[in-house]
Image (tube, rainbow, N blue to C red; front, top):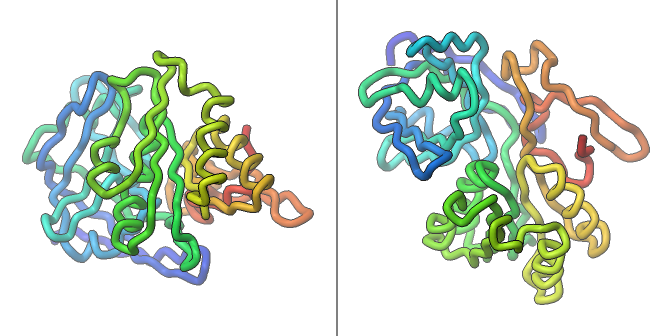
Length: 282
């Protein structure tokens, strides 16, 4: 593809990924409910082959419709499909950058940089995986569900939202063979006490070898408590403001607990996926 600039991105766990900056054509950009949209880009096989669950791209939002977003926007990968040549993103329109993204039409081009960051991992002995997320946080976990199916792991997806109309990806998780549990504010089922009861029930049934979550401080604290109580490990994909996305600007630094020390790490470079027990909630 014309104008491709290749960058080498060494990351944790002695893994090295190549990231590319290129312009991709928009295949579709449609609403999925009253709050979220799905952006589908036409992507080459070489780019898609390098994508992993939990990674993200840095998107150069267009200046259109009166919007003038300056910095790139980090966006987790919702899906990557080499067989169809598609790269998917799920997003909520909240500001200038996402409003500009929402204005993109089929055939227009979007400049992307990626894939970036440290992905999720699934240990060989983790047979029963529990995914817990709320709202658009489920977008980050969707590729992980696909990987779990490929590896033949059992999966429970706990999906939370303000209202049933805003539940995300439940059909997608069910199609992958996951047991889907939905919790909503409107139905009075998403409070922390009930979520704890649901997760403790999975632990008691022997259906929780590892936890995976994204973003929410409330869910992070709860999963850390349950994980410590039962010795269950987990991973979290953190959301953070990012300027460069490649570790140079140190805009996304957060504190983490490592052993008996507190260290400061870049979410874009040493993450966005971290050990759940090391993350510190704001």
